[in-house]
Length: 249
Image (tube, rainbow, N blue to C red; front, side, top):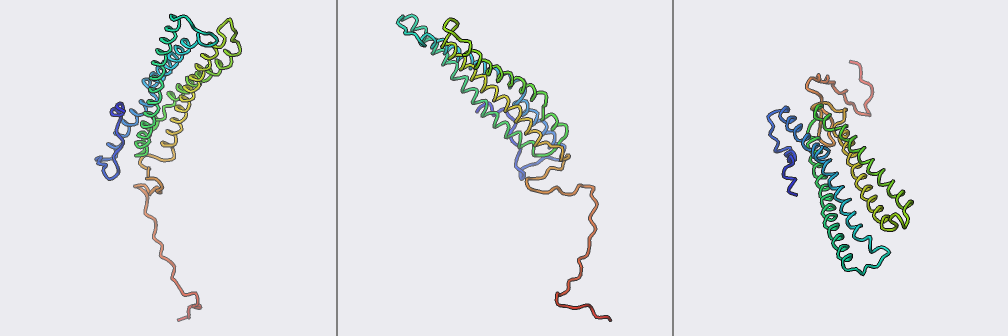
């Protein structure tokens, strides 16, 4: 994807790392984490999330408007048939690109998340780690996504229950079920994004490890720079199991 070119690159492998000191490494890590967090949860990403959602709804609404005359009716008027074909084509022209853009955004988010994890495990820094958790943005995504899910649930039950032949009938029900499905899928995607990011950030930047205490996977933390050396204890003398008590001299 061309947009991935503008993302911070992943950190170099251990054998190629050439930071002059830990401060330089932490500075690069903080910049990369901030940019990747912004690409995942920032205002721009939230705006795109809502734009793709609105395009899905507009596309589905146009398709439903075009197909509505076919439901329970037989079209013989060429003007009405032309209008139906036109609306359906326009709706598909909006809906299909919106689906593609949504899937593309999800795949891009996965790549961004992988790079964020790679930078996060590089070291520990209390200030950068606190910003990475982004509890305010996570709550914003959570509340908005919950509202979308709740609205979809209400539409899925209320519209079919109240639909009659006079207020829309089957065409209204078909549109409402599609709109509710879009609300549900979009809301669940946002919920998974918000909860998953916060849990990932807590796991990667847990308070159990202090600055500079990160070790590689499966390794044990070594002693700190100020740790006193352990006293050396001489091993006990080794005797044969068959030897008796030592003879007095």
